[in-house]
Length: 392
Image (tube, rainbow, N blue to C red; front, top):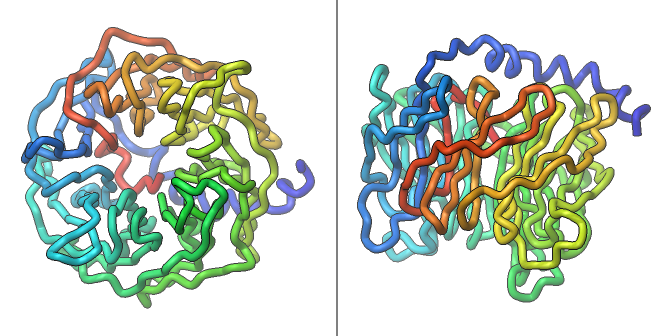
């Protein structure tokens, strides 16, 4: 495995250097603005919450909320930090089998949101949105529609209608969850030449060549990663230094490591490990996955076991080893985020309605529970404004 990685390490590092430099040179204040996407259950109108996070104490304080339409569950921020995009995760919109995608201007000092416009997601139940690394297009994964869509970004940050919709096809062995394709995420690679989409329904990570100027996604079928039957790939995380992609698999509680060849456009499965401690046999569905900027620690949220799984990442090979599974002190930990300083990890417990703060050891990557938390209804997605342009 090491030999294969060494062949493409230098090219991968060169391709990702710009993105890493942008992250490394961010200037952090003692207070960071956090946006929280939610499900608007029970007729609630406020959908996106604005929260101030104190990076010294770990304290959370709600400072605003905005009506962003129904179920603004997943969020992304433009690389310029001035526009936020949110899916509206519904299966029907204006009588059609589609959800929506909304664009909001971000005010300079306060971070408050003002709607710019919205467009159809071109598929039911959009569950993921990202922005390409140059800020030219928005990419959306439609879970019920089983497709991914590309929407060009206009000069003021608003969205034009989709110019490309790529329909996934197939089924998997889980009759209840894999009766059809279910696109669950889409992100661009560090070079911004490719887009990867994890499809839970067909056990595949789809590889697309991105043409942002032309507004097109071109499927590189020979480059797709075929995961083991019933895995249910959901979210992806790129290693910051090695040509590797880590995939959180929702249906079998595992993480799969893929080798990514950016020269020829190909994904190759290398290894798969469990997100659960040995001997645990309950029902569990991993949700989110992130890797520390150092590349030494990987995190995955477990819904059911209600924990964050912490993995060490071998520096030369990327091999994973489970270090810790720590309870999230809430029910159904959906998405989570490392704060911009790397000192904290915040978790959105969807069913128990809380955002919980963990202290993070920046050397070992291990987590420690704090007493800091904030009650919010059905939190799903956490996005720091300082992470503008981060795709995953």
